[in-house]
Length: 414
Image 1 (cartoon, one colour):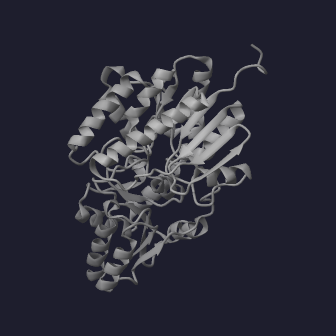
Image 2 (tube, rainbow, N blue to C red):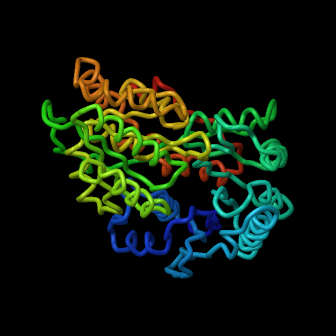
């Protein structure tokens, strides 16, 4: 068959909860999504499909219903109808949403489906095998919290997902070593090929950010959702203690979330809002200013949160700012030399790490220097999501097995 008569690869990409239609419109204009600092995974997917001549159906669970069709691309925001459901209804809603995605793949005559962790339970995609559609889940979060007791419902989901991993996956795309380990734990001796990727950034995004200040108040930056399970109320208590002890430390919290109003109210009630500042959501330019003003970035995610590869860790490293976090954060294994490691859910430990960083001693400046040494994988294409997709799609097109391709510390050091 000649190249001109070869059937196009057809791909369904199940994106996350973001506005994938908005991202596509930016991509079509040749612009980056202004709401994101990293190169978005969906934009990388669009690039790969364009370069490979593939036809693509892209579906996100963003709450604003919208759709656009342009040439080989059909992009849709398909809201999850019962996103706030609880208990059995929550699980039923995820199964039904997943069945809808499977039916969309069948109607689209997809060769392969990528994604699937958002909106649906993974095991539902085993149904794709009935229609000879290949499945490559793209995992951006751990499958269960690593440092909390596993609930009975999660144990059942793990058994169902284990069956999928053993018998229903072409490959598993993993954004962290912790996710790779959980997949292997569930799959046992029949683990599918695991293919690594990491968030990718333009090298210019954090260029010209000055080195951290050597004197003056030490500023701690939190960037992310303002939620209880992200540890924001623990940060308020730490700041109260440090302020009472006379430490010259200030906190800046950037981001929206369901706990933002309560956090601001509590800070005002304690009379500390002058040094514990909740800025709300900031655009990319203002976030650059916040990174530049900070001395350290803190990621205090609690054991109750199902964490993925926290991009703030990478952004901190690219801005040459050390990070304070715990083993809850899967990104830690890639950048440990630039991190102050606290104990999980231990606010006294976090306070100690802040005090150590605020001293700005030799240990602090070693971590600042280490940021430049571990940042390479996040600004090159080798381990990008796009590179991973090309690896998987190439195998699907050739009708061969996907080869395992995992990121090692040696790869990071190159």
